[in-house]
Length: 388
Image 1 (spheres, rainbow, N blue to C red):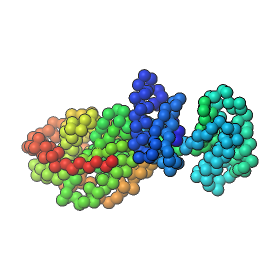
Image 2: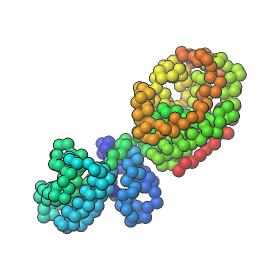
Image 3: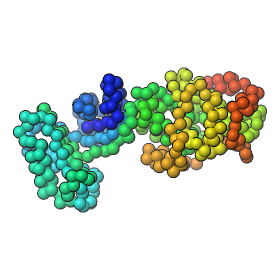
């Protein structure tokens, strides 16, 4: 497989750090294949194995940092063998990506870095194009807007031949920017926020809050399935499931009902910060979008953040719901988020939640609670699941 990457190539003296991380993440994503190894070549990564890699292309295309993946045939510098192999690659691409399609815009690109190869780039382009057009009448040349491109990279000892490009997510390799802790709910937004944090190089852990017996086991199962889906995008995912009912019951019994939702979220933030300290996570990530629900007014966001000892990153802050749904569909979490299961924040939900909470009033409301004990009890009772 030939792996291309984008912004990694702009990292100057630190570039090798990002490239090495990308190689490690590719090996992790592709699993225990015999003879699996990676090699950096001229701003790209070539992946070799002792078994065919075609069936593993989609795994590589889910690795952050990868902009595109091509299944490649590597052949000796024999003119006839190169033409034959190119036609085989073209046939595979037409079957996989253009079944039954006619008038496919097409072009050939040849890169001849080995100047001792006796055929010049233009000669090879014309030969390959003629062979392709003769064999497949569905192709029509379109140099500016080609949908199908046959590419040949002629190197010192061999040629790389490919005709497919599977798009990757781009971004930075997971783990190159440290660790973050996502507050993962069962909704649409927080899984998208986690995915966007991963794309910027964060290795993501998840913390979710479970209000048993006020919510049933389906809530826990839903969270696990969401975390497993996100695990497809990074190696070594950890999920913390925190029993939250005792904290909620204390807030219900002793605090202003209008402040319940804000106080729940302050409690979650406090617990997530303590867990992050144990797990070397340097920031919290949430799915908040400004003004989307009552707890996400600017004043309420500020009041909730007052309980944090870490930076809080909000990748969705300027998104509307339609944009979040679109991204959730793209990454595969949307259907899981729509499974019926109550969210813990709906437990004891007040009829009129406060829209413009103040930090001072929130702190005063919590003054009657033993915050340290409630927080410590929640952390000590947390369930830790290693998903990969």
